[in-house]
Image (tube, rainbow, N blue to C red; front, side, top):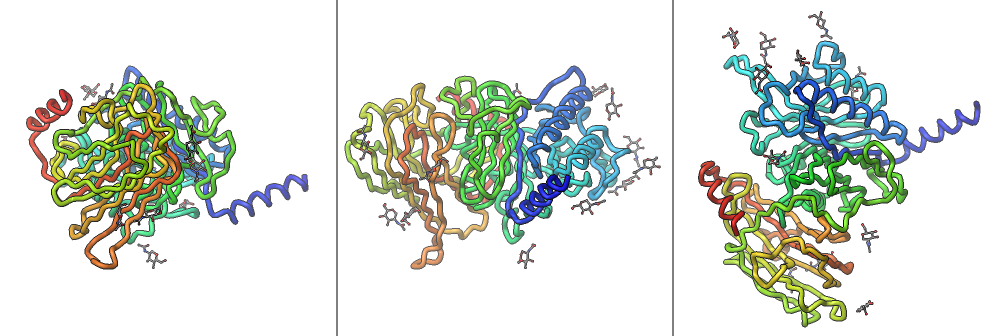
Length: 490
Ligand SMILES: *[C@@H]1O[C@H](CO)[C@@H](O)[C@H](O)[C@H]1NC(C)=O
Ligand SMILES: *[C@@H]1O[C@H](CO)[C@@H](O)[C@H](O)[C@H]1NC(C)=O
Ligand SMILES: *[C@@H]1O[C@H](CO)[C@@H](O)[C@H](O)[C@H]1NC(C)=O
Ligand SMILES: *[C@@H]1O[C@H](CO)[C@@H](O)[C@H](O)[C@H]1NC(C)=O
Ligand SMILES: *[C@@H]1O[C@H](CO)[C@@H](O)[C@H](O)[C@H]1NC(C)=O
Ligand SMILES: *[C@@H]1O[C@H](CO)[C@@H](O)[C@H](O)[C@H]1NC(C)=O
Ligand SMILES: *[C@@H]1O[C@H](CO)[C@@H](O)[C@H](O)[C@H]1NC(C)=O
Ligand SMILES: *[C@@H]1O[C@H](CO)[C@@H](O)[C@H](O)[C@H]1NC(C)=O
Ligand SMILES: *[C@@H]1O[C@H](CO)[C@@H](O)[C@H](O)[C@H]1NC(C)=O
Ligand SMILES: *[C@@H]1O[C@H](CO)[C@@H](O)[C@H](O)[C@H]1NC(C)=O
Ligand SMILES: *[C@@H]1O[C@H](CO)[C@@H](O)[C@H](O)[C@H]1NC(C)=O
Ligand SMILES: *[C@@H]1O[C@H](CO)[C@@H](O)[C@H](O)[C@H]1NC(C)=O
């Protein structure tokens, strides 16, 4: 008995001394039942079981994905719930779903983040408004945060939120964003501006588009650019190009990640601070699996959606017969400098790589926006329309180094850059570093540098993605339809 007590005390001391915390994210394959209530009910049961199973691993916070409780429904009317005021701790009058999730958080002493369709009554107009909302239960079951998604994506019946939301725990200050928010200046950058946020919670139902908007690629890019920990939980629906979740450390390390080919729920968790190399950190279908990463050789059933406006971009073929390639490529006044070392003895001369540069308008999320792109991109053939596709068998060319630099003038406070990398297995290129440094000679300019110096193969894209959100112009749905059609035909 005494021994047991000592052990408990030591563990407690260890936990206090340890600066990190144990986080879990759930890549969830949502269930769809005959009625809305049954759908929510079934999914809540799975959530509660997951929370319970994570308790034995001392998980302190668990994040479930966007639309996990309801599946990707279009009409919120019969799926939405009323979220009581912040700091509510008694949910006996609230929806059954919130009551049971709050109880699970309290019973297992875990912060629980779930995404719900929220309904709220607008007294001024006497209308019911619907929101896409992340709710956070503290480890005592109290509702401590509620974030309404600001950048809605094809959710015409919902009202966008307009507030940044953070909450503080014993183990860090957290900010919240949802899905499409990650690629908008507000909130993805404003959330980190003078707020002391160290950790970002990110539920998503993210559709991946080749080659710039793959789920894991965008998540890693956010972490490298902003040096925050990220807990990204995505809905799992690979047949629709949806899936890819991860826990990332603020130095850019991928602690855990998952991307799957078949519809399946995966639970990943680990200590956000130090990387512990044990094999038991992935749960799948609520059972333990062995192995660190779930990587896949073939992701044939992960739908390949594509958004690549090749006609607008400037390309130049990379001469792989030269060991050292150091050259700029410009589109109008925007220039990218490339420094590439290809291993000569392992270069496959039949493979095609091109440099890419672009500065101009694009259609993003049904809006016209200003973007800037730099990239080294693999192509299936010499035809630029095949660049950035996933090859049917992996590219074998090995790069000993890829380095891209560029500059931008942050005159516009709503401009931001993200590093982007993608391999043929839909994962990212590990060990890459990214920096933004103000140029000492011309204080107006910021020098961007994205570099990988560990040998990489099966490279599909290594590049920079810049955006200026002050230039966003909404365009009519009809016009977008035509553009999407054009993009999909080519
Ligand atoms: C569905 O759930 C809501 C809220 O929990 C409840 O008010 C409603 O009566 C339920 N509907 C059915 C058909 O059970
Ligand atoms: C919501 O449920 C009611 C009652 O079953 C039904 O009349 C209505 O059509 C449903 N709304 C939607 C959008 O399905
Ligand atoms: C629940 O509703 C009942 C009846 O309206 C009320 O008396 C009670 O105070 C409410 N409980 C909470 C925790 O709000
Ligand atoms: C709206 O009206 C209801 C009922 O009259 C009231 O309980 C609620 O507090 C009001 N909400 C706001 C935001 O004023
Ligand atoms: C608000 O709308 C409800 C239902 O649509 C209606 O019953 C009620 O009378 C309205 N209230 C006011 C103040 O208009
Ligand atoms: C529950 O925890 C939250 C966050 O730590 C705290 O603000 C709140 O006071 C606690 N509530 C109760 C009833 O202990
Ligand atoms: C951020 O931290 C600094 C230093 O601890 C503190 O002075 C400041 O008030 C904090 N800001 C916010 C928004 O919490
Ligand atoms: C696939 O994703 C698209 C875009 O979000 C959505 O409109 C569609 O309903 C999804 N398909 C399925 C089967 O969920
Ligand atoms: C950018 O890269 C080029 C080519 O590698 C190099 O010559 C130049 O010094 C770099 N510029 C800056 C500002 O880092
Ligand atoms: C190619 O050369 C590199 C060093 O430049 C060496 O490490 C590697 O083993 C060589 N590969 C083959 C297949 O010979
Ligand atoms: C590169 O990344 C891999 C996987 O994340 C890691 O195992 C390895 O230690 C890293 N190598 C270096 C040189 O940092
Ligand atoms: C770019 O970053 C790499 C890796 O941190 C570094 O070795 C290199 O010197 C940097 N290049 C420039 C031009 O700053």
